[in-house]
Amino acid sequence: MPAFDPRPLATIQRQNVAVPDALIAHRGAPLLAPENTLPAMRAAAARGARWVEVDVKLTRDMQPVIIHDDRVDRTTNGRGFVANMSFEDIRQLDAGSFFSPDFAGTRVPTLEELVETVLDLDIGLQLELKPTAGDDIETAEVALAAMKDLWPVHRGRLFITSFSIRSIHAAARLLPDVPRAFAVVVPPRDPKALLAETRCQILHLQRDFLPDDALKIMADSGIEYAVATINEAQATERFFAAGAQTILSDIPDLFERTAPHADSL
Image (cartoon, rainbow, N blue to C red):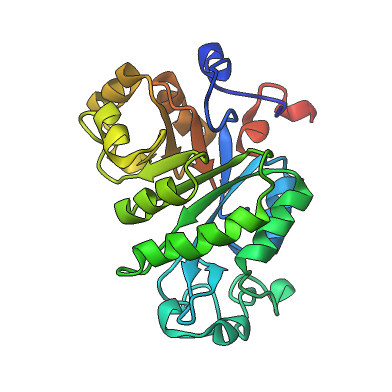
């Protein structure tokens, strides 16, 4: 377990949750290495992360690669839509120089490379299905067919998430025994009903859309939920007090930095 867990004891001791830990490293450690790359996963694990979150999209020739945006412009030296580029086009791109010359030559990972790295690091994985609008079902079908072969059957420490209801329903069909999280922007008025409708076990919420009345609804629901993306430890207090199980953060050691004993570490 991490050296310091800021959650209430009742949250820490909850049973039958998909993610027992307080923090998921958002796209690895994107303040230390290029987001969604293998160096970012290694940096997150080196800082104590027990879970990482990544995004998977399809290339034009239906290959699953780890990248967040519809376009490659922000995180590589290329231009254009992922869905318009072949796998070989994507693999020719430099996904590290935008971050630092130290990472020049870093490639957009394949799903297989990402999973191999996560397993080697012995950490958990949140795999976000990130379809380009229109290939929601295909993204789920291709990525999750690969996961059936790549992820050890009885290992656990895996869940699937998406903002796309079509991707989530496909995940329920393809990997029914793997937990699923539905990601939303506006918090629901009836969280339990939304979980039932989406066939999910977890909700993922956005911090900027959680006023006190919405947090009261979430607290009363008793469901497992996470909040993204939080990089200030103090900002998590109200979410954990309202029953949040987990937060996503760009800072893998966020809580260790602000633990009561941090000065002596």
